[in-house]
Image (cartoon, rainbow, N blue to C red; front, side):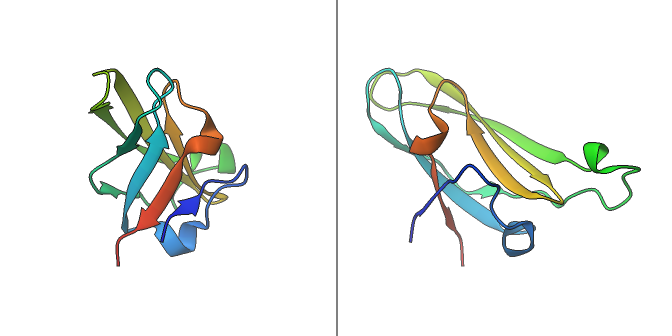
Length: 99
């Protein structure tokens, strides 16, 4: 089941240590792009403050429709998990948790 990303972060306790697949619409050619599975990092429990608690993973994927390269960042902190894709509207990003 695909879950549409909201403006608030996804629950970190449900996602940390798991893998997710993302899908989004390429802003250049409107092709729906699906990623391989991406690991969700755990928040840094040894951080001195909530500003320093973020962990992230970054990957790149080429759009199969136009070969545009998108950078994908999975950010995880105590507030939750947020998915970013370069040059893509945040509301076009959805994720699916690997069981």
